[in-house]
Structure formats: C-alpha cells, structure tokens
Length: 283
Ligand SMILES: N[C@H](CCC[C@H](N)C(=O)O)C(=O)O
Image (cartoon, rainbow, N blue to C red; front, top):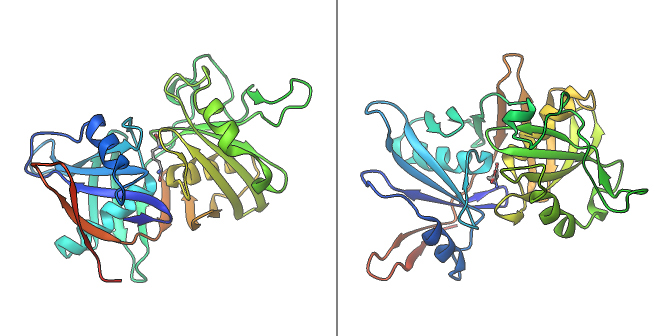
C-alpha cells in the first residue's frame, strides 16, 4: 500500500502463531516488485476480545514501535474488509484509534508524545529536549545542529533549517545522525523548514529504512517539537516529498495524524517458495 509515498506492505498474520522475521522482511524487500519501507503485520489480539496487535518491521529487518503512514494503511485495509469506519489497534506504543473520513482520508490518533530524555531515549541526560547539543559538520560552522527530540513511541530528532530544506545532503548526514551514539536505539532524522505558524516542509531519513517520501511519526514529532519551541501552532499542515499530512497535537496531549492511504496491489506468499504472487489492483 501507499502511505503518501511511504511504501507499506500490510501482512495478514491473523490466526497464525508465527511472526514476520527480520530475515523474511529482508528477503521480501530484496525481491523485485515487493520493496517496501515498512511491513505492518496484523496479528490476533493479545488478549481475546481486545484490539488486533500490529507489529512494525523496517526494510532493514529492525522492529519499530510506531508508524503513522503504516497505521493509516492498516485502517484503510481493515475498514474496507470489515465494513466499519473506526478501529482500535494495539501496538508497542499503546492503543491507537483509526477512522476513515467521508472524503476517504484516514485519521489516526497516534497517542501521546514522550519528551523526557530517557523516553526518547538519549544516551545522556538532557534537562530540556527542545534543544540538545548535537551537531554535524565543521565544529566552527556546523551544517546541522541543536535538534529538538521527541518520541512517538519511536525516536525522532527534528533539525530546524531556516530556508531551502531541499539543499541539504540528507542522504549523507542521515545515516551518520541515525547511528549517532547519543541515540542508543538509533533515531529517525528530520529536517524541518517552518514556512508559517501552521505550515512546515519536512524531509526524513528514517531509522531502518533510509530516505523515504514521507514519515508520519516524524511529522507528528515535528509538530510537537514546533509547538513546544514556539515555532508553530499545534495544528500544522506538513508538506513532505510525497505530499501533505495534517497533524494536530490536541489539548488532551494526543497527536492526531490525517492523510491518504491507497491500496496498490494484493498478493500471497507461496509457502513453498516464499515468493510473493502479486495480483495487481485495478486502478
Ligand atoms: N522508521 C521508523 C518506523 C516507520 C515510521 C514511518 N514510516 C511513519 O510513517 O511513521 C522507526 O524505525 O522508528
């Protein structure tokens, strides 16, 4: 599925006791036609009668705690299958609520941000995570510095750039920052250019997936970071390479993400060969 350019494979694991393994994820990503940014594996509820459990795997095989674009794809897939409009899911990051809007857009309540250094997590104590000492480039003229950090269940660093966010070599700086020792669980690295109190442009180097067309949880973290550093309002339209997402950090501390989710193909994995058999979805 296509989550604003984020390539998502939604896998139905209901009724099965096994999980999508890192090796399987890497193998699927290596096959032509099934490259992805994340796999969203739908499992049975951990406690019968409660919400389906969703596991998230990046294209490098690592597990993630949250995925905004992927959750929208799961909501779109399951509301269509079940003929309902609103669904609840359990993830590592907690319970999430998704709803399909009348205009086809999908809204997901991504829960509450975690802002303490030990919740991001960071390798050392920072009293104020709105601006931490981290920079890249020449010591006397850093290219990027002083990010705001926040967790949406997964770790995010938002670097603020004054203009021309497109001019930065994020493909070069991204992996260095993703794997910086200050982030013991690595981190998703975003560059944000605020163009108005309710508008920003965002580019993301994703932990475990690299440069992507969009990152939903990065958009959520950037709006939380923008609001708490007084750069933005609490409701912002975030323009990513793949298109626009709308994010609101509500007064009840929940972050709500709204955007599209499109089904591109369905398929099955041949258990004998492990090869996907794709059925193209009529456009
Ligand atoms: N790469 C992220 C997970 C996917 C996030 C992104 N695709 C989204 O839409 O939120 C991580 O390892 O934390």
